[in-house]
Length: 384
Length: 163
Image (cartoon, rainbow over all chains, first blue to last red; front, top):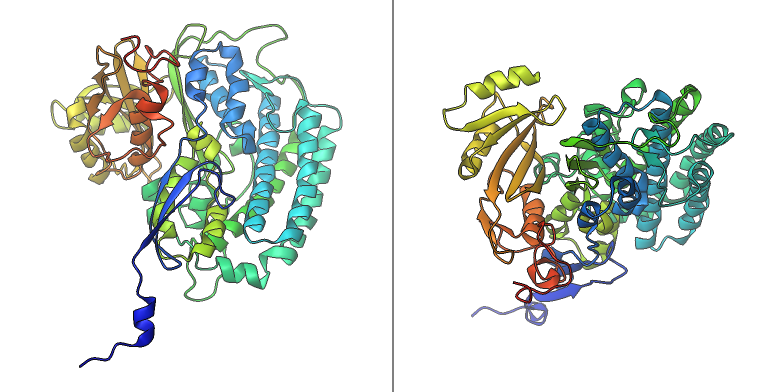
């Protein structure tokens, strides 16, 4: 006769199902997550999005071409410049518009500032998920400096509406370049502060190392790009693979998982790697900003003169931009009419959401907010 | 692989596979039009054949051109970095509430899942192996009262009230 251990009997439970969302502090935005739980351990998960769908792609078809840039700001307000740039690049290819070198440099400056701003927002979200209050204040203080630069150049802090087909709306303000260089110096110091405060904090390391490991092959199969893909070793960066706006003129290295020192046997592509990679990307962006600010040429900033209007002929084009979250594709179709026939975005976050069900398998429930924060899928661009 | 070299390889594909080969827009990217019914077979070949090695489906885009949905698969080789646009078309159904069935390429490229799910909700193109929409009940046929990215969509009118 076998004797059943008393604990075995009292701990025997069926799987429980738990639905989180659409509004929950643990989630990256309005979405639902259906979890199957064995005690506190996640056995399986399914997600549901669409709660933030704004009909953005349909709206493009109903607006004149001149409104397209303004609308594309709302693809992802964490990095509105990237949506603008993707649309402009595609339309400029259709209309054979060549952006003057100064316009291209300003686009690079704003893109890298946008990347830093978005990555600082990312640090805040991760810190929030970890209940690490102090770092949040430091990072938000520094992000204000970047938003100040946006305001100085464009008059806006988030939704910039600054790019135009053929270049940029107006030339950058006097003193902008000097202030960019000041911010570059500031961030070299600040990155060390962030590391001292947070990155090497014992609790942070314990909670993120080995959590939500995504292999390079799985990242590639699911189409995960950007810092999440590179943290897994899927080393793809549009700025290198398909240089745009003169990125091929700059000397920069794209950080990837291969360059991170780790303990023997430690996993590549975990939550900690995803966080570290963003910090290293801030450093790369600072290098790029410095080069662009020091080398910005004088001259025209837009292909068109004041009052001239771009005429978009029939045709189609597909542009790619490296956003703070990964590969943003933009397919534009024109029939030569006053409005686009079709503008379709390939937002990087679509793939990041696809990765959630397999990343959360086997993790404990209390680690879910940390995992989602480090993966950082953007609900705004996925639903759009 | 330059575009011409890629076209030379495409020329060697079995007869009947490629309906037309052209450059995509004004870019240097090659694109080929194929029959919709062969998308899985051709897709698998383009992925598995080492001469092509298009192992990454970067994007799936649909555009309604008159009474046809043009479906574009943006392919990329991870090893070589080469790109190709695989294209096919499917007729727009005569009634705007009708869905149209097409072949899912998820068995070839897993990354197709979220794109097919979106296209199903917004265009009413049902992909054969797409078991369930990932988008919420707020979107899709029920929530939108139709398929909003079709050209004949009228916002805010539930299905059945205007035909």
